[in-house]
Length: 470
Image (cartoon, rainbow, N blue to C red; front, side):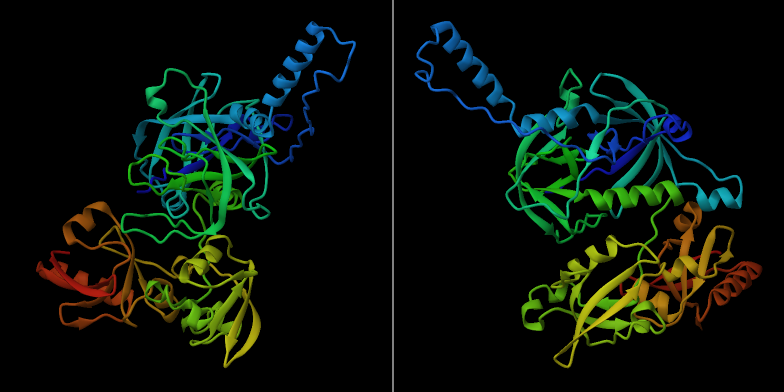
């Protein structure tokens, strides 16, 4: 069983506008969250406490000896874990959705920039303070969202790095498990170790997110912990608690956190663009069917390269075997998905690949998804179409090499036609579709004749048909 409510970073609006205010606060979205994050790295004064031998001071009185023992025991309670928890806990909030709103675009510009929906939530700080927040953006693939609140002087925590985590080092998970059953707002702290890094979770049918390159920990993560911080022993946030493996719904010591670098990168894109720009490198790799064959292959086979795409320009071909990317070993398609998830358009990706038993190195420049850059054609009022080309065919994994991609479709049109965004229209009645304009012409002709049409689409590798009046 997995659970993984979205995670978010909360931005105090006043802090963003006032030059002398605190840094923008950033927090998790879900039952738990980190309320504020500072870029400064924290340090902890090293301390050790040693119990003195009772006979060390022959002149010590019984009362002095008892006091020394008491002081030593009191000091030993302040472990690095307790200190780290004390540093992070004040910045953890509880997020509750109190109502949902549907925002309707008034202009074409609002339609382009406005998020599809808006949620207002209440952030319960550890002090018991409630703040109203607005959802600025969300990304289901990475399970990250951004919330905005009007506030000053929110508690902050230090940002660490997940890149130098050591297997076996102590970590602290903080959140609000089963917070709805508790009468106070203080967060719950659990401790454990880093069990593994770079974990790839094989996706289940119901998963909307992509959980790859994750931090695995045995610190207890229960419903309500997701969205909260995972901190190292210095009190630096290194990840965001996201999901667990469990048969009962409770923790069995197998939990996963999103690396903090990914969470911050996605949050920054949501702040700047309202959406996350996906990386496109113009190549397909062997999928789930090759999960057990990577040892024989010695890497990850490239199955298709889009003509003119970034990988093609870098010299890769179908049949090449990816050995490493960004210094990480490539064993399965999930390793490649993790690389794509952590880069943005315009960034270079260094890959080592094998061709005819010889290893070569290439640098692929990441590009935006072709479908986001292609010209769109509107038809029937609320359907946007894109003419299929080799780049978009590779991006979407279509089997057919002709047709028109449904980039977006309104709720009413989708309900009446049973078409979906992502469908590839390959035929209307008996007419083969080569472009978006072909679909528009066919719809308009049927509308003038007031007759129904039959539309054939490719969806998930298969072809379906639907009949409706355009």
